[in-house]
Structure formats: C-alpha cells, structure tokens
Length: 464
Ligand SMILES: Cc1cc2nc3c(=O)[nH]c(=O)nc-3n(C[C@H](O)[C@H](O)[C@H](O)COP(=O)(O)OP(=O)(O)OC[C@H]3O[C@@H](n4cnc5c(N)ncnc54)[C@H](O)[C@@H]3O)c2cc1C
Image (cartoon, rainbow, N blue to C red; front, side, top):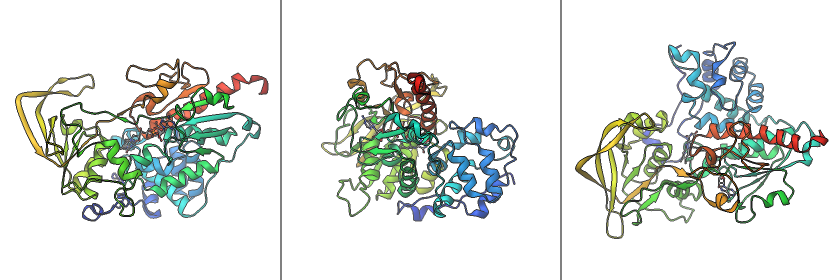
C-alpha cells in the first residue's frame, strides 16, 4: 500500500460546534496495518530526522508484534511526551521527511503510530516508568524554569538518571504553549495532564505560580541549593503590527485570544472569562497560531472568519494539515493583503489592507511582498486577532545581570551543551531559537540535560 492508513476524524460540520479532538486516532487494526508498511531499514534515516532520537523502527517493530508496552518503553527512553508529539509534531518536516517510502509514495505515518502507542498505554493503564537508576545522584539539584515541552524534557530526562529536579512555572497551570496556546481540539487536556503526571511520577517536583525574575532571581536559585539552572521560558510576548487603531476594542493579540479560550476556558458557560461575541473575525498571519485562532473563532460562534496574509498561499508557514482542517471548517483565506489600519471610533469596524504583489526573493527565499501603489481594500470586521508570532519575555533578560542575549532578546547558548555564558545556567527551546516547534524545544531539552549532567560531573568530579 503506497498510501498512509487514514486517520478517522470528526466531520467538519459537527466539529465546529465543539472543542473535542478532531483526529480520533488509530484502532489496533489500523496501527498494525500502518506499521506493516515500515520496511525496518537497517540504517534508518527517519531517526536522524527526530530531534530526540526515538528508535522509530524499534517501536514500530513492537507494534507489528502487538507488544505495545514494549513499544511504549522504547519511545519513552528518549521522549517523555509521546502522546503530545504524536499529535502536534510536524512529522512531515522531521522523521517522515526522511522515510525512504516517501520517495515513491507516502512516508510511514510515524506520528500517528507514536500517538497510538501512547494512547494504548494510557487506556490500558500500564504506565511505563523509567525508574531512577542512580540514587546517589539525588544530592544534585537542578532547577528548571518553565514547564513547556523544553523544560519538561530536561526534567523527564534527568529525573530517571537520579537527579532531583524542581520545575518553576509562572502560570497556575503547567505545559506552556501546549496548555495556553494549542487548543483542545488538537491536544486534549487530559492527554497533556497524563504526560505531565508521568513526569511527576518520575520524582519531578513542580512549583506553580513561581515567576522567576520576580518571586526569586535566577542567580538566587544557586543560593537555594540548586547546582544547575535550565531556562526554558519560551517566547510568550506577542509581536504586534504597530499600526493605527491597534488599541481599539475588538483587536486582540493571538496570545491573548488563545489564552482566554484555552487557559481561561472562555468557551465554557461555567467560566466568567470575558470574551467578545464577534460575528466577523479577521485573523492576521498564517502560522500555526493563526490557524488555531481562526478555528477557535469558529467554535466560539463567529459567522465569518477570514485569514489575511501578506504573502501567497504556498508561503504559509502553518502545517499543511492544519491549513486543510481550517479550510474544511469554513475559514476563508485572503492572500497578498497587508493590514494598514484598524478602522473604527471606539470599537473595531473593519481592517484596511494594502494590496500586495510578490517581489524579488527575500532572505527567507520567499518572494518579498511589495505594496501595489495606492491599492487598498477594507474587510469589515468586529474583531481582529494579530497572530504574527512571539518574542521572549524580557523579565529574565532584565533581571539576570551579565546573561548574554541576542539583539532580538533570545538567550545565547553553546549549541552542543546549551550552556549560557554564565557557568551552570543552561537554556533551550523558544527562548533561544525564537518561536519554533515542540520537538525542537524537546531536542534542546535533551541536549541540555546531557550538558547539565556533564557540568555536574565536572564540577563535583571528586564525587564521581
Ligand atoms: C498557538 C500555537 C500553536 C502552535 N502549534 C504548534 C504545533 O502544532 N506543532 C509544533 O511543533 N509547534 C507548535 N507551536 C510552537 C510550540 O508550541 C513551541 O515551539 C514550544 O511550545 C516551545 O516550547 P518551550 O518549552 O521552549 O516554551 P513554552 O511552551 O513557551 O513554555 C515556556 C514556559 O515557561 C513559563 N515561563 C516563562 N517565563 C517564566 C518565568 N520567568 N518564570 C517561570 N516560568 C516562566 C511560561 O509560562 C511557559 O509555561 C505552536 C505555538 C503556538 C503559540
């Protein structure tokens, strides 16, 4: 079979009225059928495409043998968030991109199989724990700042080795973007909760409502007895357009829009979170955040949702699958339009857009959008969401003296060890790369865990 085994999904006309998961997962039969497509290559190139180095042919072989617990054990050796990755990783640009089957047909659906194994394990209640190996390492304490995928990976990698890990999270809930950004219809909360529970079961302590840089400084964590600190604080400060009318009532940043819905549960009647009852919503941007905002707008009652993008369809950075899902649900796309002004007296009435045309390639290799002189169009709207991406929050930067930063506010690290210019302080994920992907943040977490281990071994070499 040259095609992937299809994944059952909720029908578009039904799913736009609920926040339940859209993709419904493989049955055992489907998983075995898809696993049967894997050639089990001796030199598997798919593994090279996985930033956390999951033994992909190894776990797929176990699915073929119906040994699902063993499959889960293999995955969890290097990935403590498999149900999350199986749902939101852009596998088409990672492991699946390197699958040899992709050259002539469709790559093996590795992400779907990973999800199947993680869900099977949970449904059959047999948590595969990797118990700490070296109890003597428990005297070394590591502080992780931020409970996004990057911080959780550092914690989930060091705890089974025996280190004492404490995660400090600024919000009242854990998970970072997985919780406040990605909506439930792509990543259900119980799926995330169970993966975080797994990390806690490894012995990791999580302290919420702890804003490092305010409630305690980064350097003071050493005074509190931590031997190393990992900064996985992400990039949570929204980029705005800086155009007239951006302060009008009805104009939101993507971050705020999604946080109100996902973290503050604005879509539920039993929560008091204020939320606009907008009919015509314009979303600005074309990445994953924009697709999530658009699809949330439909589910919260908007009649017309339009995504406005200054480039062309083929330049959209969002995952192809999410663009298709949005279109199926009724989201409209307007290309080569760039917002020039938000119109209205107090509240938003429309978005005035400059008409653009593709120009010469820019540094990203894509045609630079160039305004057509004097050409403008207005899209009527009572709500607009600016979803152009995020930069790191300045708090850590402004409160940690001497920490080397990039010009755009990211933390500078050694690419191999993830150590910053301050010995014992490590960093990774979006706070280093700018907004990227879950799996690249996790890959950095794995490298940093190795870097932290080596640092502790080197610093306390008399103990080893
Ligand atoms: C809406 C949206 C959709 C996305 N969809 C996808 C997708 O489908 N697939 C994909 O691969 N990627 C996606 N991404 C990108 C992906 O989510 C991020 O790259 C990833 O979450 C980065 O992980 P992180 O651990 O570096 O940071 P984050 O997930 O941002 O976590 C950082 C954590 O640190 C906490 N924190 C910050 N400052 C402090 C402090 N001073 N003290 C204590 N805690 C602090 C924050 O509260 C947060 O919990 C999406 C991003 C967004 C915004």
